[in-house]
Image (cartoon, rainbow, N blue to C red; front, side, top):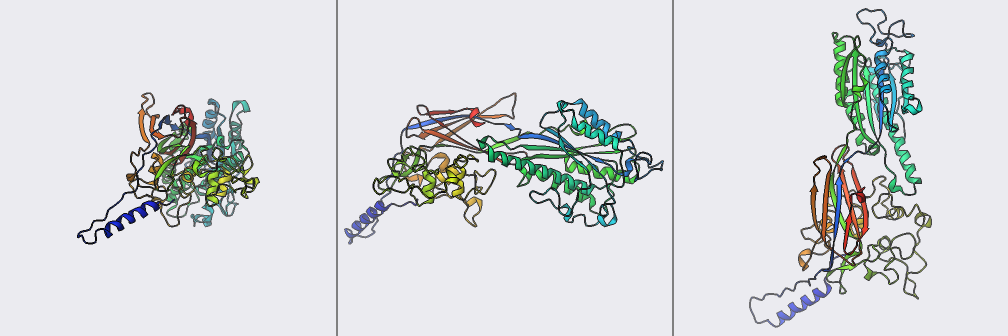
Length: 607
């Protein structure tokens, strides 16, 4: 609503004209300035008290470990594998692990000595160069290492284009004793197989690793969307984010090299296309973190090839934010316990904003449409009672078609329903809205908990943003709150975020729209022109817990909340941001009824 002062303008002009006419013979005429009327706000106020914590938020639902073991010919001797051993007869370049015990005995011990939870999964990949597959280790494959076969897969695809996985990948399974330790059996089968052969292909193995994580996250996303579709209460459906731990173990330099930048390419690939999956716009919600540790096992570091291999594998671990260990295969097995001892990182959150809002009061205009005034909104639909029909004051959806009066007013030019010409009330003929869209249990759900039902978001054309769609235009102003206070739900074309509806000053005073909404001052009228204006007063105190200094808890008191009654409903909007991890925004909204002008929110309300 634009700020107009129709009566004020008329009176002001009349006074100035009268003064000029009566003073024609005088010099140095000074026009009389009449200020707009000032108003005193409702003196009846209440208080909201909130106790809440910004915790180390452990959002990991599943821990998934991928073991990658080198199966190249340098591991074997001529009497242990069917063929393809790299150095079957050389005493100086003897096999590093002919019986596969160095690679598997430490892993089997780790699996047998530990008890695992139901949310822990394991997968195994053996990698090598198969010369029979399009020259995988030939000179042709050593060039063009940045070609299409390392491009990430498109949505819903399991592997990169032009790429056929050559390594056997045993999919994720648990290793529970109650289920017979199935993953231990997979590792034992690998140990007994002893089929080491040919060369070592790091590049395609890392591509397959990345694509396996993408496919797993795609499946998690699909399961989540199916749960949302079928859940009676979608707000209770949680995203299951996985922490991926990888151990990459090899005994030598790869044989699929050929260009000078090969090592830097692999390092960048781990950093930018594997570890960075946690920040993926499409799947980041389902990937908490990816950490790659690496082991180099050999019986010597004297040769240039061994030193080069160690350098590369150590760089891969560094790029993967993991551990690197060297194992002398004459004296030790690979210590998987140490390599996998990577704690699940907890995610600290910071408070982006906390807004308290009285659902039963609104700023409007007085009877003469001149001065701002706090008005009553009995049904909390975002429309003051004075603008609603008498039969609609206590009905959020007056015509019962599944869409609130506020949304209908926005969609249909300020009219909350069709008027019966005889009764002058809402008619039974409601607006033409598909009943299969809104008048259903699913349509009435508020999946993103922003105060607008899924049906209403569809009608407002703001339902296309998927998970986290509480903020359609990404200006950190929840859609329900923006609609209630008359802000645009879409960012104007060509306007940057700093000039979005959230941050501009509609009334040319010193407060942005966001601050006006937070403190409940009129964002369409200059605050300086209002007598006795008392914005919401926020007082936050840190409650320090010496036993857990990272667990930040607060007591927040909000005073001077204008009331329409001592039992008004108070709404809280909290937005948190992960300051470690992906930087994801976490939004919560909840409400409570006042008791004698006071409401108390406890930590349980914030969960």
